[in-house]
Length: 184
Image (cartoon, rainbow, N blue to C red; front, side, top):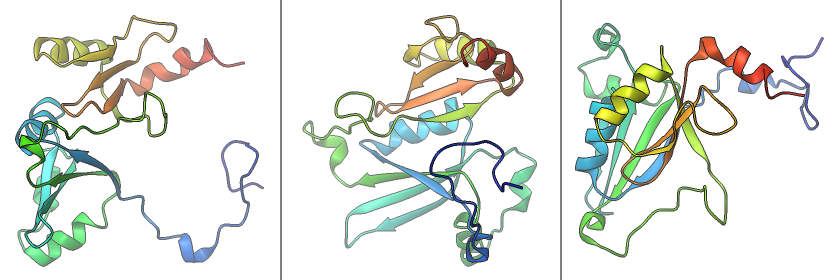
């Protein structure tokens, strides 16, 4: 029996026990202005700043954010060393990297990977109701790449953060029907 739930060329059936406790921990974005980007991810996307690391000698700061519920906050330690361990053990963190001085340098821009040369595409947020979430985003002035009823693939949206990175917005319960219309 395959260790995978689906099929694709290139998959390995070998599941080295040395990897069984590996955790996909973070995706990193470079950001120009931490004030506007932190506001976006904490106010608009509801994320929580878990840990901040300042590196004065190298002139940069790292911000680690996670999507946690208010109830889950009580599970995070107040002890600095313990919270550092928790930060690097948790799955699905967003790491924002700010190089000091970028916020005042007009020449600094980051490539979001969705124009040539293409590369990185987007991160995704599952929401209970994509239409309600997008109504909220629209009221908050969030730029859209695609609204839920635009384009060929209905029911998903793409918004942009202040640095131009794309964020897919979708409702998990709607995905089976949405995908059924587009899969061969």
